Amino acid sequence: MHNQTNTVNSAFLTYSKVHQHGQTDFTFHPSQELLEVPISTPFTFAFQENSVMLAEDKNGWWNPLGGHIENSETWIEALKREALEEAGVIISDIVIVGYILAKNSSHPKYPELSQLPITYSKIDTIVSDWTPLETHQRQLCNDQECVTLLSERDAVSYTHLPKAL
View 1 (cartoon, rainbow, N blue to C red):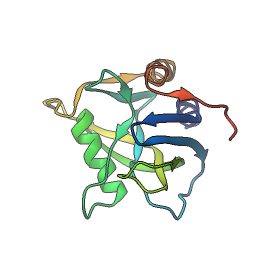
View 2 (spheres, rainbow, N blue to C red):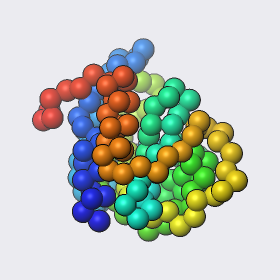
View 3 (cartoon, rainbow, N blue to C red):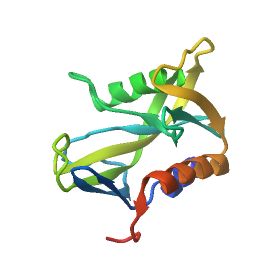
């Protein structure tokens, strides 16, 4: 369990994403509880023993599993659905390890303040006949491979801010 938390903590730094509507600042907060603010997108680091499942999206970026919540879905239901869609895995034992607080300056699609739950989970089943729809491929990787793949994504898509805001 210690290695799982280290992977999550090292994968998310404080960063800012500039978009056509302005800027959104994201900060990871280790916590076993969520805030009383809207949830936009849950993510999980799905583990099978000491390996983490990541999915490569259509932009070529590797990500933990997760995505947007559909109408009438809880965030946990969304997380399970996204894990199956993005990587063909059935997950259980979802544990909150923190959240990313998103401060949105002006994007009309998102509230001014929202959170993205960050979890780890257990892979119960890897579906052998899974067909990628939203992603290109899936990969089980060790902690270092996971951090490397996520760091490559962040270097391309985000401007890093100092760790403390």
